[in-house]
Amino acid sequence: MRLFLTVILLSFSGAAFSQSWNLDALETEIYQYESLEEALAAPRDSVYSLKLKSRLREVPPEVFTAFPNLQWLDLSKNRLTEIPANLGLLKNLKKLILFKNKIESLPPEIGQLEDLRELIINQNELQTLPEEIGNLKKLRYIDMWSNNITHLPKSMAEMYALEEIDLRVIVMTENEQEDIKLMLPNTTVQMDSHCNCGN
Image 1 (cartoon, rainbow, N blue to C red):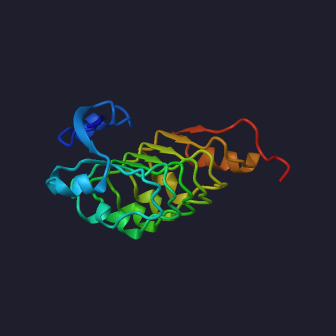
Image 2 (image 1 turned 180 degrees about the vertical axis):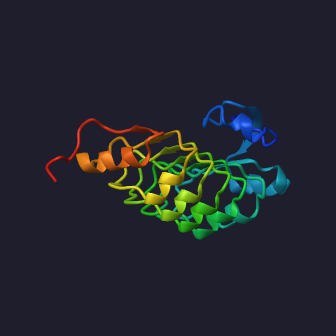
């Protein structure tokens, strides 16, 4: 059964993007492929959205090399422990969804996704993010709640487009929470009110 979702039009200007980080703000219906086989059978440049949920333990290499116009990649609810460096090949990617895996780290090559607007990495086992994430100058939103992160890379201070970051269900000291807020003064930072203040 075909599943349609809303994604952002490539043809809108950068000024239009400044309205909101939410990719649903400017929308058009496009087909979302839910199996790699189906996507590979289609004209490769017509695949804009791919959602793979098959208890994957690793990402098929074709995901990164076969679809030059891929904008929306959903690999959530799998059994992934890592994301390969080939992620950096997805130059047109605007939204990356990786929640509910067992990912322990992101590759430095994530910094090559210069058009990325949303990064959804909650419910993983991340302890930190690579410094190269600061290269994502168009990133508007990061959801990383329920990870093991206690600090963020200093390079994120230069992510001036970042509007919101979700750090709930992450145990931090008051000092760690304050450091993040000071580093991102123009970003809405969601945190739990409680902290591991005894450490």
